[in-house]
Image (cartoon, rainbow, N blue to C red; front, side, top):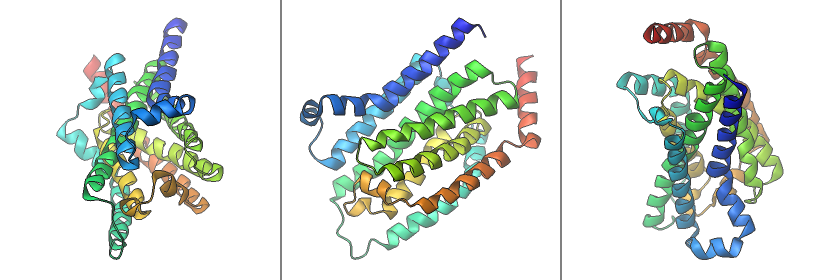
Length: 274
């Protein structure tokens, strides 16, 4: 790829990150009164609207950079993606069960807000997966290539690092610095797995959208969002001990991208091109 084209792709990545990840937080900091007057006063509704805007922006970026293919999937691709994500579905399914068992005796938020919270989990999955595994990872593949295992892994690693760093914006929302470090490190490792799942699913983001939504939903439920805890409170409930997930996530990534599985995928791709 020519240097000029690579620069355009890098600028496209930076533009995507700004629009999909930094625009609303930046506007909230620069024009707090204006944003408060525009957005709903109810915290749950406001968070829902913000995530909805984020999802629309992320999908818009896919159209802008002609990456809408990541929104398509085959039945085999969906099955493969969900099977690859099975450890997360099982683990966070148990966490969600524990959260549901905590509900008796709690005063829940209004039903309307509960519905918005649940939809918000999916909006988070849509906005972050379309942005990172959709636009950003695909743009990295444009730069490094997508025909070899090495180039794809490099694209996934770069995307995962950016995904982790993006969580530092939570400092502006009031998350403790130490917790932001933990969250960013875990997110980077999780991004490796999400990148691998996306690739194994035929480069479709739909499986990771579902898995991402399920993970966030389980975590927020367990930490009390349905009975009044805010997003910031839920994130601040993380502990340094959760860093143990980093080697686990990394191991899953290595397993999913092992040569015995991925090399045949590249060979089939090359045969299709020929």
